[in-house]
Amino acid sequence: MAPGLNVNSLEFKLPDLGEGLTEAEIVRWLVQVGDFVAVDQPVVEVETAKAMVEVPCPYEGVVTARFGEEGMELPVGAPLLTVAVGAPAGAADPAAAPEEPAERALQAAAAEESSGNVLVGYGTAAAPARRRRVRSVGFGTATTPKAAPTTAPKPAARPAPRTGPVDEPTGPRGEPTRPGALARPDGPIPVISPLVRKLARENGVELRELTGTGPDGLIMRADVESAIAAERTAADTAPVTRTPVAAVSEEARGASAGAQERYPLIGIRGLVADKMSRSRREIPEATCWVDADATELLAARAAMNAAVKSGAAKEGAGRKISLLALFARISVAALARYPMLNSTVDMEAREVVRLADVHLGFAAQTDRGLVVPVVRDAGTRTTESVNAELIRLTESARDGRLTPGELTGGTFTLNNYGVFGVDGSTPIINHPEAAMLGVGRIVPKPWVHQGELAVRHVVQLSLTFDHRVCDGGTAGGFLRFVADCVEQPAMLLRSV
Picture 1 (cartoon, one colour):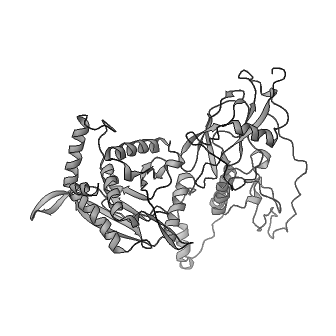
Picture 2 (picture 1 turned 180 degrees about the vertical axis):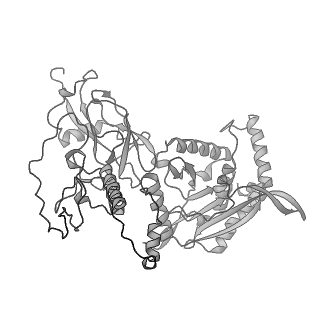
Picture 3 (picture 1 turned 180 degrees about the horizontal axis):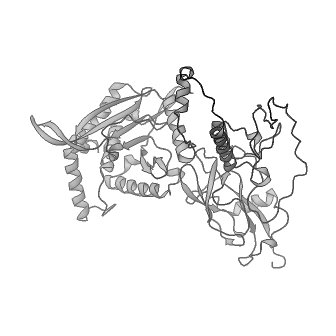
């Protein structure tokens, strides 16, 4: 280190990723200890319940320590790495870092020089006024060893012996403790991740009986899963008590015929489960549907694609117009005529909040699960602009590169379940929105056209709406307008 060089070691913590996300999994480290990082340089790739994002470091200096291995989940506020601010680019020796951490004042001063970005493409003007604080527990792969606890853990009280041929150690509820368990009659349980707590709660695992394999006894997800597997193994090898068939209840029969495997509702699957459950619990929804002749819409799409191919289109040139883009434009025109369906409900104030802008969400199935990217300001876009944005968001969704901002803030959702080969559905509203339009597959069917029976391309449309926002007349008028635009695309010209 050069003489007189002022070097401060600053700790960069996992930032608040927004939208209620409290933890993230480390997918890939992008820097090593000893590397020099610049301001806003991505240092780690993490996966949340919504997307994979690269987290940039707001400081410039040399990485002196990293916390957490790839595949490990960290809560918001947990340390990611430490950076020696003021160190030259060639200072690759982590031993050159100061022995003591920098004071808060030094971190604040360095933060003033940093970008304030928490995600690539996002800036923060100021820290949020309130943030849930997470108690940190030492873990990770820091280059400097952590001091051992100064106080020894309290000895576990000896429980009363069980009656029977063998005295086994028992837990707080009297059941045998699992192998390697350490009773914790009082004091905090060394668990950070809410997902680990939820997994233990859903499977009846007593966390006080477990000894964590993580640093400082931290209980990891693998510890809970091992305890669940041990319970199942013990249940499978336990002696079977034969009971007369007549004495077996219907409830017992149902339990014995249950699933042989359990899958935790975590990540994006857990997020979808929570959101759908909340929607069903809070929104009094109703559904109406209608069949429409989409033959003319298909003809209009073919004509538009011919214009795109000839180079007549400017924005999104060379990209064919999708049916989803046409249904998006129809939905926007219908919302302009029936704006009550572009609303949300504030039950605390007992008010319906009508939204001025249309941010159109659309359901996209990916390998990671169902996501709903949002086309911002769909009401001010052209058909080609909407089509280009749908293509971009769909590709990002399949690659897992959607940002939290691209997955939130929708005001109305379009669901094209026809791609799965089904005709109809009753969609669940994407809370806190007020409605969702569903589109089934378009198939040739017998249809009365101009007074004669003919084979036409027919689609079933369904609208699920919040009955607090409007009644059937409004919902029916909206859906009828959509069907009319599908049958006669020229009606859109009257709404432009």
